[in-house]
Length: 362
Image (cartoon, rainbow, N blue to C red; front, side, top):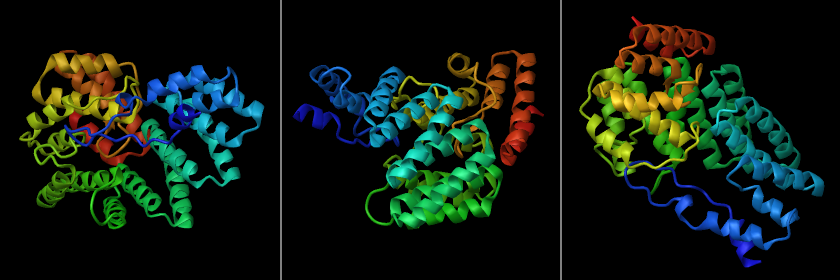
């Protein structure tokens, strides 16, 4: 019974901010403990469903979902759907993830589970931005903010302002981006920092580079270096795009070293995986490293019409693919990829990305 209780303990996984990753769920022993707990409980039991809902494979989550519906356990059904939606998003099964998100949000509303709804909306924002679905993204961000204001939780409000800042950045609403990023930061004063705190600082730095205020951008990067403890490559996921915009490659070597020390899951659309691989690919383009560029192309080359990753540090997947193909000496394929990137940016309404893609295409 104690083993099952520990295996079911909610866990917040640390997001790697730089070369020092302080804790990893995969290395904690909890996955192995969960497997042992599953073997110890009766098959197809309610307890097994609770354990399976936190599983690592869609098949486990689907079994948990079946048990939840049989037992009429709404909380378990919500947990299984939430994890299943996230798993499908991370593996590129976006239509299934979208359907499961909506179903889970309806259950969260019925159960008045504000914590579950907040995380569902957060992942919905990321998936919508990834797919270039601006109306869905804006709707999810709006609901996220409304729920956070009603809940009056500083953490929820900070996450909502972070999501608003990213959405504004994607559309070129620079003042809106600055306003919401600063509101996110104002809600997190004091010692330590959260993931949204670091993202807000990185988004502000990138915004100022994009609008030509390089001194202010460097100011935010200096603060970010103090926050993350890595002044050479603060929050390295964002630095390659900053270098691509400004032409200043002085941080690229430190960025490459930092990226090389970040471990990430194998799923292609898990956030850390996307961020590390896309940043590494752009580093390869900047350096002219064909071997590394080709490795990225093998990972993401078949995925088209997306923004990877779905935040301010991202690019149209086809635009990055085009840059790699150009580096690899395939100009005709690069032209075709640029055309697809331009079409995606026009369809999505990501104005700054359209401008940058047209510049690179030209």
